[in-house]
Structures are given as C-alpha cells and as structure tokens.
Image (tube, rainbow, N blue to C red; front, side, top):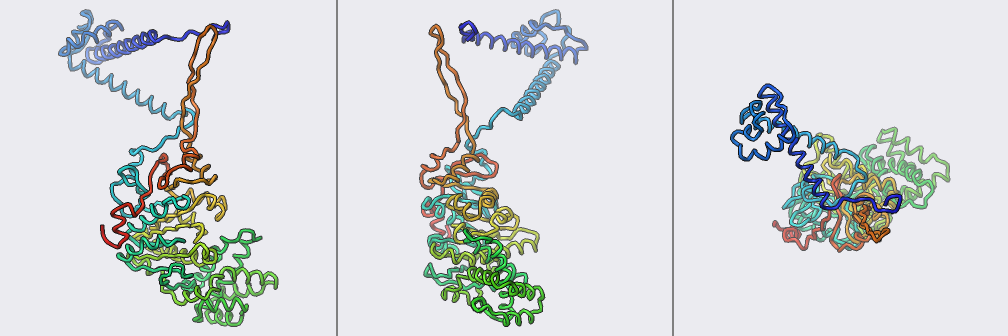
Length: 559
C-alpha cells in the first residue's frame, strides 16, 4: 500500500502477456540484426546499416526465402548482404556465441551464494556409483532401493546405527558375511549371526570360534594373549591392547589412564618372561596373585633384553601404595582368566592371525553373552587387534591392500569389543585391505563408550552411515537432523486491506528434510543412508531369510 492508504498498482495478466510478447519481439529483432550485420561486415565487406524493424521484417519473410535469405531483407540493403551459405554461416556463428554466453552466465549464477542450501533426497542418478543389480566383489551390500541393490564402494568403512530388533543384523551384517569372498572376522553377542552364517563359511574355508565362556554350546578354539609375545615389542603391544580393552570399564575411576598404562607396563615384561621361559597365562595370573619377582627376573635376564628387565624393575620399585594399585589394576585387566573355563580355553594358540589371513576364505567368530561382555572385553580387544595388526603388517610388506580383503564385522561394537583405535581403523582400513562394518545401537552408546570427541570421529571416519528406523535416541536424531539439512517449504498467507482489497503473499521457510518423528516412526527394515558427500537416500535392509540367494548361501550351498 502507498502512504495514502491506496493499493500499489500491480500488473494484470493482460499487461504481463503484452510485455512478454514485446520482449520476444525485441529479442528476435536483435538476433536478426546481429545475423544481418555480421554477414554484411564479414562476407560483403561493409556494414549494411540495418534497422531493428528491417531485421524483424526479414525474420518474418525468411520462410519464403530459405534458398536465398537475402530476399527476405528490404531491396535497398540486399546488395550489401552475402549469399545463402555466408548468411547461414553467420547465423550459426551468432547462435553459437549466444549459447556460449548463456552457458557462462548460467555457470557464474549457479556458483553464487543464493542463500541457504536446500536439502533434497538423492535421486538414482546421484546414487549411480552405488547401484547394482547383483552383489559386487569386495563391496558390502547396504540394502535395497527399488529393484537395485545399494553397494558400498570397495572397502569403504560402513557404520550401522539402529535399535535392537530393527533388522540391522539380519538385513546387513549377516548378508555381508554370507556374500564375502575372503577372510572374515566377526563378533557378536547373539547366536543368530554365528548360526545363520557358519554353514556358508564352512563351505569356503576353515572356520574357528572363540567362545571362552562357552556361551554358544559349540567347541571353542583356544587362544592366549601370549601368542603374540615372543618378542619384547609384541609383549608390550599385547599388554597395551589388553589394558585399553579393560579401560572401556574405567568410568568413575580417578586417573584411570595412568593406572591402566602403568598396569600395562607391569604386564608386558611378565608376558615376555612367560613366553621365553615356556610358561602359560595361568602362570602370569599366579605371578600377579603372589606378586612374584624372582622367577620373572630370572626369565628376563636369560632373555637378555635389558629394556624388558628395566620395565619390570621400575614397576616393582614403586612405593608400596602405588605398587598395590598397579597390581590391582593388572588383576582387573586379566579378570577373565580367573574363570577356570576361560583359562582352559587359553591353553594353546590354535587361533593364529597369520593362518586366518593365509589367502583363503577363512573365518573367525568371537562370541560372548551380554552378561559376559564386561570381563571378556580385554581378551576380545587384544585378539581383534592382533588380527588387524597382522593385516596391516602384510599390507605394509607388499605395499598393496590385503588380497583377498578382510571383512571385519563388529556387531554390538560398543559392548563386546570396543576397539580403542576404531576411528583410525575406519579411516585407514581400506588402504590396507580391511573392510570394516561397525554396528551400534545409537550415538549415545558410542559417546558413553569412547567419549564425545572420539565417538564423533569414529562416526565421521565411516564413509557409509546407515541409520535404521525406530531410532529414539536424542543424540542420534539431532545428528541426523543437522547432517541431512533443511528443505525449502513454501507458504501462502492472505491479508485484507482497505476498500475490501485482498492480497496473497508467498513466503519461504525451511524445515528438516528428515524430521525426528519420521525416523522414530519409520517401519522396521527401513533405513536412511548417509554416504560421503551424496545427498541422503532412503533404502531398505535386505533380510537374508527373504532373499533366495542368501537363504541358499546360509545352507552352505551355491545359489
């Protein structure tokens, strides 16, 4: 409205049409003028002095003079225009210049900041690098999208976040193991992952199960942390892995990092002494209980590694209160071996990382119940780290990724075996031939286990992030809302002015492309895919029992 209360003049539809036609006429006249002027100047040796009206009239007459376009122009300028070929060549040049300028303007405009970026769901064209009609070698199938399979790019780390009973194990973890052509290392707190894949893996190579607490009822292979302690460096590495695995339970312990690192310093020479003197992990437990010194020192002196001897001397030379705390922490780290059943399954080392990665399609399962997770974490972390270390060592020796690549499936990763360097493995595994699949319940679980900063890094270092439906965790919903972004929503509002006039205003607002309620209420088996820099995409898990080929593989047969 103007300052006197009257309504400002708005163009009516007839006026808009008239102005549009006038603009079209002006553009056509200008194009005709450019063509005629260019032809005369370049091919006829002079400027034809054409008017805009002459050019427009020539365009209207052109259909009747296609064989000789000069005939469409006024008589007084025809002698200053070239023949048909030159006229058409001029038209082509003018058209090419106009198109080139238009493209340049379009590109420059598209690069400008036009305000908030608008989120959109990914199209199949954008997802083309991930879509396939059948499973692909060295690529984990993330789910389905219509008639296509959605496959992660080769060896790119995959993170699955979904609550229990939403299909993440049956729809992604199990299919990945069934289809993998190479060695597999898998952890789980549930027997279904083992039960539904073991026949398929037996048909391809050697299968071993590490079940130190006997939770599955199946025969467990033996493994001892002393297996990697033949060298002083190996003993230090194993002690650090065990301590880091146990430190996942350190909440509420003051100066936890200090106590676990000093306990690792105590355990490393004990492990080395045990191996070099032909003893077992049971002997190490006894040394801890009795705070033995003489036997350990004798073994270390005989091994002739001064740094190992010095480390043990430093540990036992602490003041009595600190020494007692260090021994108590070391006992906590090896708590699992206080169980006779676990100790029994540590007699021997028939689980060997070098044999798992011998070039075949071998499999190693690690299994424990929810109740056994806490005390077995250090053991599982150390075994997992020893296998991954072997893969990295082999890759470094050849300068090439492991071939065939190793699939590592960490079902319930925050509980059964929270690897302290999971963020590093997620970022570097592909370069060494390690395909990582990490399964979590929600981000709150990850923050609780690794701390906020480390958990955020773990999530970011996974190329593919699959968020299952039914999520109710506030942190996960907030993360998805931020990373997916907002979409543009247009709203119309009507107002009434003086003298009965009405006006309609269209405005733009923004709202989340994936609102929290849509994720929480999503049906079982549905998922949101966040992949690299691609727009978000809706996919569906692929339960193995609904897929004929996967069901055949699960029975140990070839589809």
